[in-house]
Amino acid sequence: MLRIQQREQGNAVDICEEQPEDWHEVEALMDLCFAPGRTALSSYRLRDRVDPVRDLCLLLRQDGTIRAAIRYWPVRVAGQEVLLLGPIAVHPTAQGEGLGAWLMRESLHRAAEMGWARVMLVGDAPYYSRFGFQKLDHVEMPPPTNPDRVLGLELQPGAWVDIQGQVARETDPDTALAHEDLSGRPDCQPADPAKETPHG
Ligand SMILES: CC(C)(COP(=O)(O)OP(=O)(O)OC[C@H]1O[C@@H](n2cnc3c(N)ncnc32)[C@H](O)[C@@H]1OP(=O)(O)O)[C@@H](O)C(=O)NCCC(=O)NCCS
Image 1 (cartoon, helix red, strand yellow):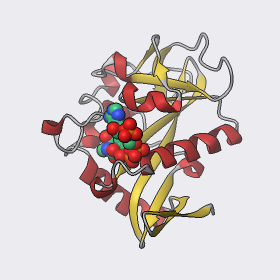
Image 2 (cartoon, rainbow, N blue to C red; image 1 turned 60 degrees about the vertical axis):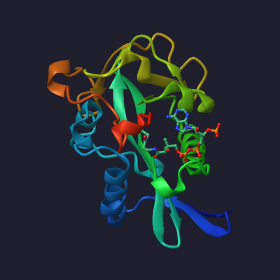
Image 3 (tube, rainbow, N blue to C red; image 1 turned 90 degrees about the horizontal axis):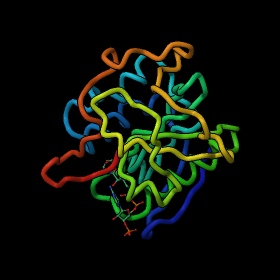
């Protein structure tokens, strides 16, 4: 199991892979960071009954408590394997301290080492562009999803070239599910919509 320790603001922070017994604590963190009903979001339909990519689901622990988490799922676009990044969440009291960037960079590095070619997410370009994500013009998430928030990153040169179409669940690699089957609420709502916290 990956276990690296870094010192953040005086307290040691461990990075480790999420274990099955961590599931509920991570869910609680996600519930804290996102609006109620987050699992009704359309991107969750792509995760239904599909196992996450466990080697890339990482946690940051401080004093035994999970401070941040990132998860990934496999999806398909035009029959090709794609990593769907998210959700990622940092505890509200620890946001802005670089924990999100740490999880992003570590997990993307590991994804590249594992041989994944391309990653996508639904989120704010102003945040995710710092990691190299750009708008995917011809990749369609299930509605209702703002197309400006559909972003991609190549882990291998040219990996997104000519990959276009609807995003499909990994369990249905040959047939993109009809969008009406996958539709849900607009993707990635912040915990406090009044704050207009962005992210995806
Ligand atoms: C989005 C999130 C994961 C970022 O993690 P973090 O640890 O707080 O962010 P970092 O410390 O790595 O980065 C901070 C920087 O990102 C910027 N930033 C954070 N969210 C941003 C956004 N949505 N758009 C633009 N910039 C953003 C901050 O302004 C700061 O900028 P600076 O470096 O110029 O000062 C975290 O804030 C979070 O969990 N938010 C709530 C849940 C969420 O929205 N998750 C993403 C959707 S899947």
